[in-house]
Length: 107
Ligand code: FES
Image 1 (cartoon, protein in one colour):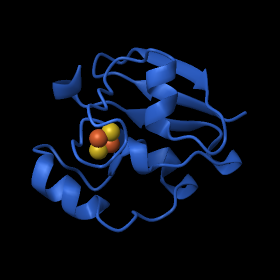
Image 2 (cartoon, rainbow, N blue to C red):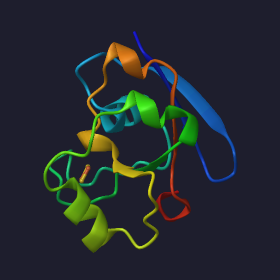
Image 3 (cartoon, rainbow, N blue to C red):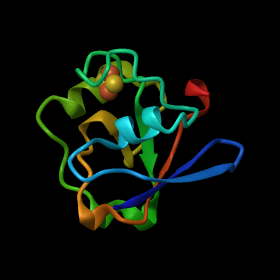
Image 4 (tube, protein in one colour):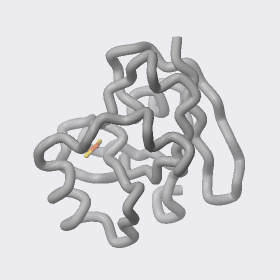
């Protein structure tokens, strides 16, 4: 099962096993990881699942899905080139070792 590491703004890390086929957001929620709120439950209506993908992990991800870019533009005040909606990141075996950082405003 892929391991995903969530890093808070303080630098605190949590590494958890996340099943293939679920999402990076769901992995955080089911493991009580702070910093991913996911108010809409993964329906791409809130952007409270925003994460910054670690530079070392960018090559493990597929391109953004339709609508994700627009959602990030309109709802995320601190968007960066590495910003993603974690509910849109479907976990694959290739994502083993993925590192994501949670934004300060979601903690
Ligand atoms: Fe709401 Fe991702 S959980 S947009």
